[in-house]
Length: 170
Length: 459
Image 1 (tube, chains in turn red, purple):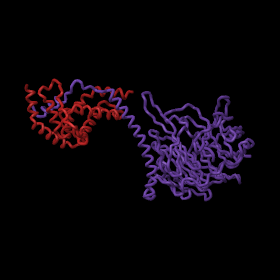
Image 2: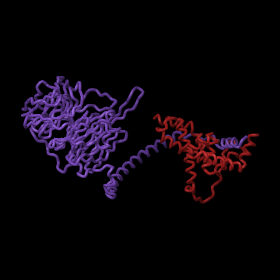
Image 3: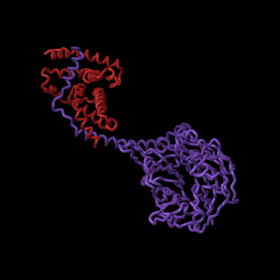
Image 4: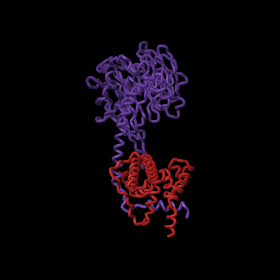
C-alpha cells in the first residue's frame, strides 16, 4: 500500500497549511476544513499521476482554490430557510488575537469577491509572483494586478491596514 | 511599512489555526479509497452503457443519414462478409487409407531453388511463387518468377511473373476458389516504404496479375494476416498496438475498411492470426506490455480472441482461450478450427524455453478446445495439414519425450479426428528438408523440397 502510505505522509505534513488557505478563502474554519479535505481526496484520486510530493502540493493548492471559487459561485443554492435565527459565531480563542483583528480580517476578506480573495492569498500569503498567480488561476497578469489593487483598496477602506501598522509599532 | 507588507502580516494573523486542527489522515485515506472504488464502478457502468448506446445508435444513425454519409468510416461490403452457402465438409481419402499411400518423385520445379515459397493448390494446379532465391541458409535476391504444376499432365509451366512493382519478401497467399491473393505477412518498419502496400490478385484462368494496393488504414501495418470468408478476403494488420481490418472483394477488386476491433485496455497487439468460419472471422491478438525494471524488463502477455460477425461488429470472445501460447496457422475444417502445435507466448521481450503445446481443434461456435493427443511424432510435430478427411502431421525433428526417440525431420503421421487415432506414415525417401509446409492436392500430398524437388504422396 505504498500509495496510501505516501498520501498519509503528505496529509500529515500539509493539512494545516491547506486549511489555513481555506480559512482565508472562506472566512470560516469549518468550511476551510471541508475544502481542504475535498481537495485532498481529489489529490488522492490523482496520486498515480502526481507521484512527486512537490506536484502533489501544487495540485492540492490549485484544487482547493478552484473549489473555493466554485463554492462561492454557487453558494446561493445552499441557503437554508431556518425557523429561528442562529446564534452568532464567536471568535476562536487562539490567545494570539486579543483585539479580534484576525476575525475582522476574515470578515473583510469574506466581503471581497472570491476571485480577489484568491489573488490576495496567492500573492501575499503564498508569496507567488504575479505571473505565477496568473498561471495558477488561468487569468492574464493584468487581471491579477487589477484584482490585487482593488482588494488592497477595499482592505485599506476598512482601516485594517492602519491597525496592522499600529500593532507592529507596539 | 508598505501596504503590501501590512497585508502579508494581516493574512498570516488571520490564517492562524487553533492547535486542535489536526489532519484526519486515516479518514481521508478511507474516503479516498472509497471514492476510487466508486469511480471504477461508475466507469464500468458507463462503458457498458456507452457500448450499448453505440451498438443501438450507430446503426440507427447510419439508417437515418444514409450509408453515403459514412463512406470514410467502417462499413460492410455491399456483397456481405460471408457466403450464403456453408462450406462443404472435407472429402477425400480417410486417414486409414493414407497409410497405404506411397511416395513418388515428380519433375522438379523450373524456378530457381528458393526457401519459403508460397504454395497454393487451385484445384487443378500447384502454384509456386515468391520466397528468397537460393537455400534458406544463404538466400539471394527476390525473384518475380512463378510457376505451376499440373498433376493431370505431370508437367510444370511458367506462369505470369509477379508484378515488377511488388516486392514479396515475406509473402503469404490466400486462395479464394478462383483467384490467389498475395501480400507480405511481416514487414520490418525500415522496409515499409518499399513493400508496405504490396498486394495483388492472380487469376489462373486468365494467367493475369492485378495489383490491389492495401488501403491506407491497413497498408501501414507491420504484420498482416488474411482469410477467405467465401465472399471477401478479410485482411487484418497490426500497427502501433492497434488492429485495422479491411475486406477485399476479389471479383470487383473493391476494398472496404471494416470496423477495428476494440482491444481491452493495456492489451496492445503484437501479432495476429485470423481464420474465417462459416459465419464469423476469428482473430487472435497476441498482446504484451513491456515495463523496465531495476534488473531489466518484465513482460506481461496474453491472447485476446475477437470475432467479426456478418454485420461488421466485433465481439471479444476470449473467455477461457489459453493465454500462454501462440496460434500458428489456424485452419477452418468445416466443422472445427485446426491449430497447429504452438510455442509459448510470453511477450516480445521474453525468450521462452524451447517447448511446444500440442495441436488442437476448437469448436467454431464456442471456441471450446479439444487438444490433439500426442501421436507417433510426440511433441515434434511442426505443422498440421488437412488431408482428405484426416489431419496430417509433419515432424519438425528432435527428441520426443517420454520415449526419448529421435524423430527425423519430415517424419509423418495421420490423425483421425473422428476416432482420435494416430497412424504412422512413411516419410519421404531420404528425409529431404522441405521448402514449405506440404499441400494437400485433393487426392494426394505434394511437397517441394529446398532443392526444388517435387514429391507426391499418393495412392
